[in-house]
Image 1 (cartoon, one colour):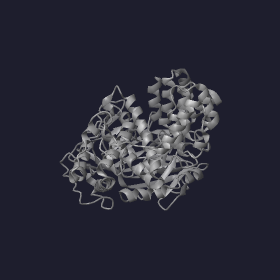
Image 2 (tube, rainbow, N blue to C red):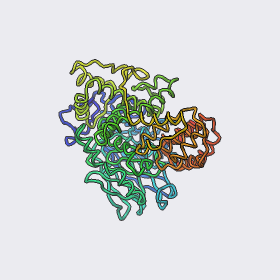
Image 3 (cartoon, helix red, strand yellow):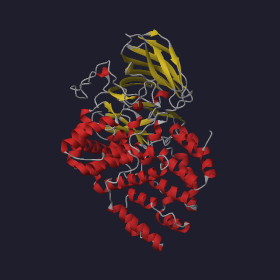
Image 4 (cartoon, rainbow, N blue to C red):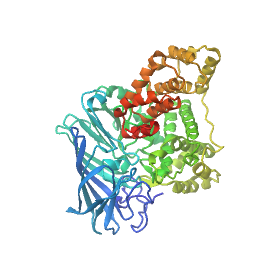
Length: 617
């Protein structure tokens, strides 16, 4: 578990326990990595000094990435690069030779740089290209304020190599400094120490002293403002959004305190969130010190803020203790969902936590059905060699991972479970781990220690969900089901029973609409609850899915669906609706919408929808 502490970090005494022994440089500190060309056991990067110029006119980033390296006697160091134009490399300040190897569609190219056994620093001068997948350049009309352009990056899983030449493996952690030059009317922020106001000259300097993997390198540039929530929490957003975002996320400090009460001190000093334009492909991305978030969670009533709890939880599970390879992705996400739900329970009660858990359980069942022809993909530990690691970023990692931990908690008791997790995060801080090392740690520090028997290997290495999975119940969801069943039986809606429902109850209600519902019944529901005009993106998504699947066209729902897909880039929402079109055999409609919407999506989303719809664009 401790073996992947980066050799050159010298234990980082202010962050992690220095009683952790750094392995001898001759040992294989790093595991075999199927998604990186790097050979870190030979030569590894330890610190990045990034100096870049961001040109919105040409939509190109140019600059130099300078690395401190640890060299175990190698004559070359290999980095990952994809769709980058490399013009020069130096070793200890002197020009050296470099080779860009053969292009792999998923992995890009190995960038091999000649060094000597004594080389301590390398530098690569480069620029991005129009194929760079991590970057999304947005024109002013694609932003909330529609006055200035915007740029953001998305590195997970292996896209950081498309905007920085780097050793792009989650087990390689680096510190970094960056100088970023942008137009004077814009502000730059990164996953680092950040400015709270614009500079006069458009030059921003960043420092990240905690070591992070490459996929957590992040940059956003736009006409944004900062508004503090507490001394260590706050939000960035475009001017028209910042007050709404500040209200929506006003419980952030409470969340941090709840998390610390559960599993120990927050080790990243600052926890800020930036709400990006609608094209951001995920709900959130846990970039250290600066979570990236979708505007689809700004509902006006704090009903979707479990996403913030999730990204905060990543500050321990994922950012602090990181999966060594993408085959172990469940260690990041399963733990984070468990932690997220514990935070939500601490702040808002067990009923809300159970509703979240049951939504995840339903998502898991849908995923299991979708993967019925690929049972190996329903295991927690995956084998993604030769595949895009994005293939493993689904409900199996998140919700089966959570269910494993929830079931384990019920077996051992919450008190023992919490003590175990707290020690797990503390003892492995700023390191990486894999599934096998976690099992050893689990056996040594929880199960065998307390003479507890548990089917750990069945959960992790076998497909599907074991029979001893925890049963999750929610009175609020049971109430929603009663209202729905009564309506289906009598065509009478008990609107009074729904007056105090939360967003999660509405989502549960809509998701569980029977397949034999009539168009007239859907119209009746829509007329009563105004689903088509909902301003809550989650409710809109599940309602639009039902409308597509059941051929409902009332209240101009088709136009609303097209508008939604043209203005929302969150991959989960977009994919759900395009899948519904495909299932309903309405591909012509889907393709027509996608033709106009595609330009508004990040490459992460377009790659998924291109495959789904068979697009050749």
